[in-house]
Image 1 (tube, helix red, strand yellow):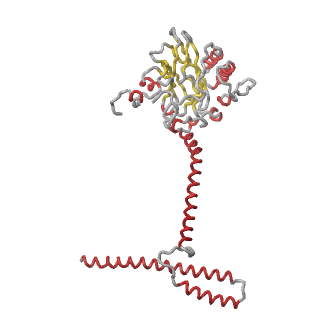
Image 2 (spheres, one colour):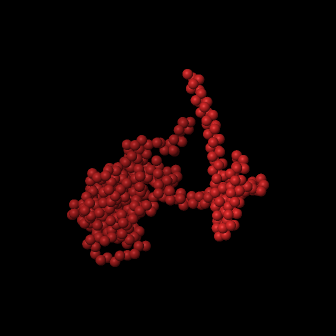
Image 3 (cartoon, chains in turn cyan, green):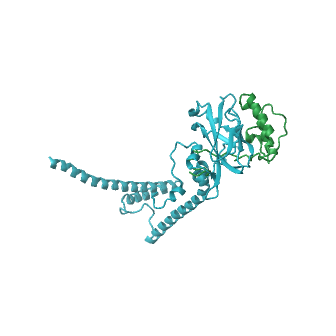
Length: 311
Length: 94
């Protein structure tokens, strides 16, 4: 039983060998045929305008040429190129080819290097990668700051918090404002320094619900920068904001009618780099930014301050 | 997570700073009058922002005049073509 199975396999093996031979054979036959056709063509073109008798003689010459061409005189591994005078000229042609290709690759690579700079800049501007500021993204273009008449009004509630370490009285001057999408609105907060010293405060803010955060844009406010209040001073802090009209197209924000804007004032201190930052624990600051529910990795300063501990 | 760092790849996740930064503090209360007018208008119109936009424009105009705000065109602040706008001479942006 097994021997019977082996026989067709052996036959198949031999057949595969013969098929390769057959293919090569066919290849060379095709080549020779194409070559003969080529000679026929050239003969026709060259002798087109000549007299019939010359044409007949040329035809006999043609048949003779075809006879010689049908026999493949080139060996198995020759190139389908015109025959070279010597091996050196073949190498010379190959080297020239290689030179052309490598110089083309080099030129292309240099071109790509030059193009990489503006391309990277465009990529950074589009994605904000590696800290690129999102300027010119069209968020605050005059066309976006036009109210959408007839759209539903969104009620923006104002909330004010302060850190316990800050002896200020910080309150909003209006409880809420109903705005149209795209409409810039003004709102006021009042802060009073109730201590006897000049204190620098720094404010953070956050918006709830979270879904509205990408659409809630502030043109100008009093957050993230130091605000120095002299002892006993009371100031009005304005805030110019708008809700982007794309909120009308967002299905997730369809049911939003109330938004809470919450500001938190902290006492400011200078960190090791000399930047002003809130004088409160990380937890409190992140809470005021709306990330109180999120788990945060410890800061690098805190991590590195514990030697011997693996990161 | 450092405070006040520039936006990064997670910029959509974080609160972004305002476009023009911070208003300088009005220590001397130079524009308090316009502010009170605006607040009164808000109270009268049940805290709707649309009727009181003219007041907010006046307030910002006061700030620009007193040097508490950079002067800019109204359309960049979204306050151009307001109804009930008196024919104020539009000043060119600095």
